[in-house]
Amino acid sequence: MLLLALAAAVQLQTADTTWRVDTDVAVPMRDGVVLRADLHRPREGGPFPVLVYRTPYGKDEAARDYTTVQHAVARGYAVLVQDVRGRYRSAGTFEAYRQEGPDGYDTIEWAAAQPWSNGAIGMFGLSYPAAVQWLAAMESPPHLKAIVPAMSFASPRQFFYSGGAWDLSWAGWVWMNIAPDLRVKLDVPGPHTEAEARAAWGRESARVLAQRPLLDLPDFRGVAPWFYEWMRREPNDPWWDFAELAGRYGRTGAAVLNLSGWHDEAYGPHGAVNNFMGLVDARRGEPMARTAMIIGPWVHGVDATARTRSGEREFGAAARIDYDETVLRWMDRWVKDSPNGVEREPAVRVFVMGANEWRTGDRWPLPGVAPETLWFAGAGRLERRPPEGRPRWRSWWRGGSTAEGASSFVSDPNDPVRDPYDADYGAHDFRALAARRDLLTFETAPFATPVEVIGAMTALIELRTDAPDVDLYVKVLDVAPDGTAYNLMSPGLEVVRASYREPARGRQPLERGRPYVLRLGDLFTANRFKAGHRLRVHVMGAFLPHFSLNPQTGASERTSAAVAPARITILHDAAHPSRLILPVMPVR
Image (tube, rainbow, N blue to C red):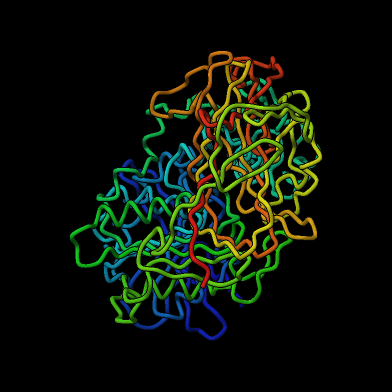
């Protein structure tokens, strides 16, 4: 589509003259800072319902790379695409996420008051453009009718951190997506374009991700001071509460469609489930909850929703959805108030990997799901019966010391377990992990009949260690008869830092040799284990490069470079029954 630039901040038009674009429209904030937006709208008619898209990645790129804008205009919407504060054409100082609530409110209410607007506002977008929807909605803008926050968060404790471990991917995000434009604005050295940043990341990423102490990283000083503030803040610090959604769902009356993928960044499925359930709970007693949830087999990104494959695993044509149509049907119902029947459709729609089919229901967990327990046992077994008696024998198995009642391994930060697929999200064949000596592997016998798991698996791991702190990863795999071993989620759902085993109480070091129970309750997936397949669990102390490495000394990796090995013993006797609880749906 050819856009003819007539002048800055004036009209652009398409070749068929049905669409006009006003560029760099000034949108004033309450503190006098002016943000810039492009206004896309039909050439004739109005006033229009308005969809707002706010981004730190460049408004020009958003309108060019995504088709949602053009489809929305063709449907009779005005679309306001805005650079957030301090990014590209917008004035002010960028501080990631913290300013998006008030700025989102001001943008929504400004749009509602314009002569081309009928006062009904919706918001859409994925990832950061999804987070800004939630942060604005928590400010209770009266004209906000609907949002579709795709692949978004519910809590900063499962966004900036996962299970108490710092998420290293934020360094790559700042490097690739944020720092170049900030350097341009500040006129300081370093990569100034995406291409320059990508080339530099190829050279420097290993150094950046291996940085210890974390706070000594030099690359963003003077460019993104808020990044260091993030790392200084413990996950339980009240400072993070600006982004905590739990307990605040009553602040918005907007209709919310939650969308994510099982192989999305960990915060995505965690956010979709918790936000959906939080809204349903907050709206009990109302005629309609005006919320729904869709989770497919996808990785992160709009484009992923149109694919049939995630990583190496093929799911067939049923895995695809039309993202634009999904978003705009929701907006038609709740922003335009068109009677299209969306509210009569199942509130929950999730894709079951392996079966390669969608399951629907009116609530979450889905009706019919019931818990079944697998118990950790000696010789690397996962059994359907609980342990009995005391340890009776000892042997060596797959590199770890094992007994009928305990299995152990050594986690060494100087030689940590690494993800062989690095940051390539999606389903991959992890069969090679079982050969490592610095983790434990537990496995069921082949299933005689299919087993369908839908929801949050819960791992309750009883352990003791000789270190004051360790991380524990519990990786669940679907193992086919040919040995292929596919992961079922992204790593951030699989980790807990032992010192943060009780998040509300803050950091609590471990006592040497004392048994503790670690709970991982957000192992979200939907997968059919076919007859003849096995369920495998790897238990390990690291999985780089996704999260910061636990020093295992009791010190924080933020301020200390010293590390020490730790022996981690998983207990699985009658007195300490480590187990994995599965949400099982009867196979129809």
